[in-house]
Length: 109
Image (cartoon, rainbow, N blue to C red):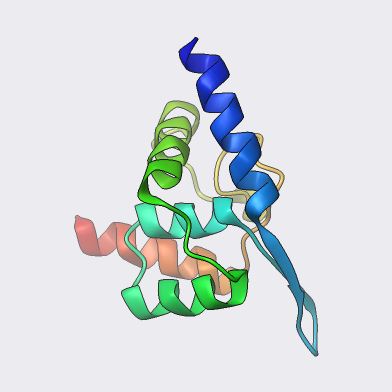
């Protein structure tokens, strides 16, 4: 039952993501990435700017579900190969997003 509920929440969250085109390159903004950034401790002003581009601010409950899934699936020494935030992720983080996540991890330690 818990797995079905988690899948339903994640499916709904993924459909809520929005894509925006930039002038130089196309950037895809997703609920998943917002939650990953939020759960990893990204700066509040960065999150606010990301939410504005996304067109919404995902709920804490949705982000908590993402956090649980990421913690269960990501090895402790994960170094974002290929820009993937965790194993099996279909999204790719930009270099600046990866740098921000790595900086937040070292700041916590």
